[in-house]
Amino acid sequence: MERPKRILVYSEYWASWGGGEKYLLCCIETLIRSGYDVTLVAHGASLDKDALSRFYEVSIEEAKIRFVPGSLNAVRSKAQKMSAEFDVFMCITNYRFFRPGSRQTFVILQIPYGPISLSSIIRKVWTGQAREAAKDVYRIQLLRSLRQTRTVLVYSKFVHDSLERIHGVQSKILEPPIDDFAIDDIPKERIILSVGRFFRGLYNDKRYDFLIEAFKKLRERLPNTSWTYHLVGSCGSDAGSQRYLEELRASAKGHPIYFHVNSPYDELRRLYNQAEIFWHAAGHGVDEERYPERTEHFGMSTVEAMSARCVPVVVNRGGQKEIVSHGKSGYLWNTLNELLEHTTTLVHNPERRHTMRQLARERFLDFDRQHFSERLLSLFKQLDPD
Image (cartoon, rainbow, N blue to C red; front, top):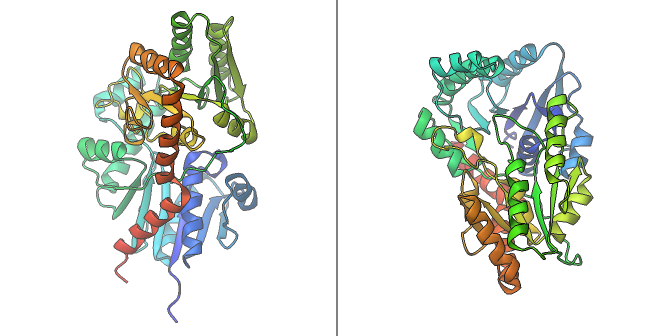
């Protein structure tokens, strides 16, 4: 009997508990169920398999774990050496590069990097972004190695096209697995919803500042409206994140705008189902040809909202364009005026909202966990000569 193929999985981000970790864990679950022998390598005790399984609702009990002591650099080096014992090495990275010894390599790359040059690195140092400049030095090495890597997995066609156009990196598209948030017995309310972290940064800023102002403008157009705006997301304890949150609260004062900060899963699920309309603005005002990393690379929260029959009205940037069929399963906008026009159309037409809710739900089904698993296994079979 042929032994199952052995896969080594590495991530230095296990403690983050974000979308990338969910993506990787769903890969692991699928591979285990399909008969692969999977081993995870982690730094110290950073990986709590049982806690991750409960949080993401994945079954990875049969996965083996090798904990490696020492610094992250030491763990990374150990993982590269260990990979020679395995048939496949799979890792997720944002800027570190690897030289694995396995026969096959799958690198999950989350970010569609824009152009990187010596002048852009110097400019970052000059403007106080020394850490990002240092990461760009690593990214140059990473991108060079990815051109020689057999399989690079990315979240969307947008990321695929950006990497190919700017850096000559070939990749395979495997959209993230999206959970079903629908609850049938929760009635819809006059709620507009946005979901995402409260932070201000170079990557994937949700532009809540812009959306709060947009809601104020919407109220001017609809002076007697009973619609409310809800913002849901995590917020770090660092001074910068807390200061930004307070600025948003101050801007929203006096308006029916509600903040749900670090809310539990059940509250997020309830709001997805209560809300009629979903707003998303990450990437607004960005030149996505030059700065693709500043847009939404896919749009997981948009699809989550669509699973709960919440109609998306989202910025026409990044991966959002691949999710929403304009005028059918939602709306795409480029300007503040377009955002307000599409939202006003939905507010005044409950029949249209009802139709678009059903089409949004149908579109979500293309991104559920079953489709994710089928696509992942198809990629493995295509690239496995045995």
